[in-house]
Picture (cartoon, helix red, strand yellow):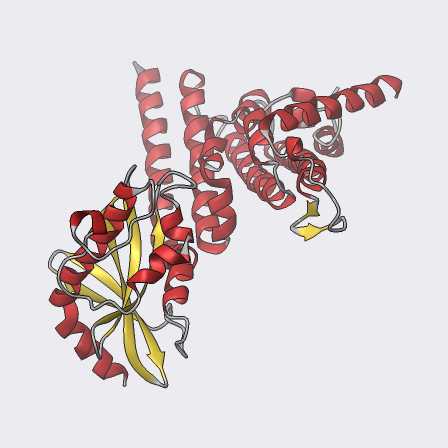
Length: 198
Length: 196
């Protein structure tokens, strides 16, 4: 049964939402979600890379010989990542300084490569576009939500604005790496709980 | 055999295309990136050194050839006259290079301030060189001549306690600035005259 374009798009938002359902791309999920700004910035970068690489891979899927397909995917993904890196340096330099190494690391992030292999290489351009956009937005949303929880609890701010009064004692644990694991685990638990019921 | 040729062709074309695209993009964004780096990495230090100036030192800058290298010189105007310049210099720190800006008043050759831009010193110890105004502030008003050394080695610079190597690196960087300044001063004066 062929899925509709809408289904390809919406599956990335819930059924296959990358960090929670596919449990992919966790390294940046844990590392950059200290603040909403970082999480959102990283999410936007991934959306761009994912959409770009998915569309290009699906365009070239008839030309790319299957024996060297992984190498080809890496070239395509790396090109888009470098484009993002250069554009970030040129236009949002402070964000680039904060995300640092995690932008180039999108290349080896499983999501773009995984989608290229599992979806774009076998499907047409429009479904691939929808797939990339859906998963990208799903990833960005998860990063932003996780970052929001950690930032609000860990430093008492949201997108750099103070939420609580001056008497608020920041819950430092949330900003540290273990806090990211615990928070991610709890979110996974909640999502599984809701998923089971529905 | 045909398959191998096909694989090689596809990979070559893809790589060439990707390389070309990235080279073009890099060319297109290089100037912008350079500006951003100046603004966010060196900008704070430059603005701090030239606090009293009436212009934007990042905009009023020029390049001067110093032997093989090109040096950026940032101009600070006071009362409409361009009389302060800052330029970059580096010294060897505890863990790596310490890059810093040195500001000098061209009328009397005295230091108006120094500011560290990038370093990899130990947080809380050597890193104080960047954050503690008592250390960086002591250079203010010293004439930019001769050699700079920490007091333990018979010089004039008060070292940060526990961070002798960092302090020495900063002193070396300022000594280096003396040499750079003496080499490029004629060129600076020419450029400043044009600005007047």
